[in-house]
Image 1 (cartoon, one colour):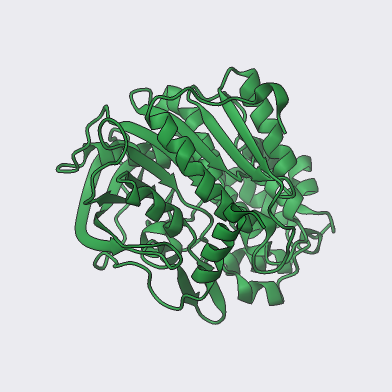
Image 2 (spheres, rainbow, N blue to C red):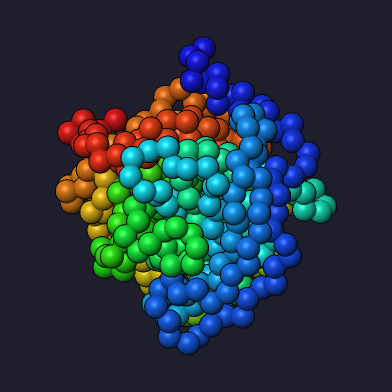
Length: 425
């Protein structure tokens, strides 16, 4: 076994033994009221500060940080003003690299569709129990600890409506990208942070966070051209929610995530609601209703909910066929797909070769290469094919985390970005 592989397996085994909190948590937070007044993206409406000590089982040491909960202005999928919550983490240790302290705009992985699942609620924990039998595994804290230990500041968004009233629109390309970019804007404006509007920024995320970081990189030139972004690390990204459904339909434990997607589409695009009401049978409607408020473990749902979406519809067709046959649904889903534009900044894409999403990820890499982006696609063949509670996609997070840090620090140091567009894996 290679030493790198041993390292991330050790991290995994150490983390799964955790039964309690992994870091100090900020004091109680009430959900902010949704702002509909015009405001510049990243404008801060409210802050709450506390001191925490970040530690993760399997990783050495403790990193003292100042934690600030932020309510800031952003935009929804129709470019109307909305309010998002995020968490800014500033280590007390100095930045170990060249130049001034950088900011990592961290996009979190899938957590669910309820306020208690929000990254700002989960960032203080590695494992969280949600009755009756759901378990949420907050793997992002490990990557955040790696970044903080190097002296990087980190801001992590809750995305649209996860810590505010409304339905979280899971895998919505625009709102995720906007929330990430505006979290960086907010952190750079935060008084006393030591950052400023020109501070170096990195975009970083895995899984849902990989899609969000990718969307932010695509949207940045038009939406946030002033940000000094040095690169984007994109780990295991879903290319779009329709592709996610197509490759996940029927897999155990995925029913809640598909329901979150449909709930978000219905909330964002009112013309799709009557279509879904007409095509979903009582089982499908119950699954969508029960999934609101559920966190990412979804273990209770896997027992009672059929994973095949053909059993959710009145016609017996899978949801992908329903999307293709409905102009309203197809338009809404098409708007969520990555690849409409090429990022201006270097991008490193990581995915396991046997991840079910890898073919689509490779296609996006090729599309960005064709648009002139400096892309490095790393296809890891060392991640074992597994099933059950942790899939290949989940396990691939660990090697991706350990190999991403050198790439991030090299971009901040101004080193030329590696490119393998001519010979994509």
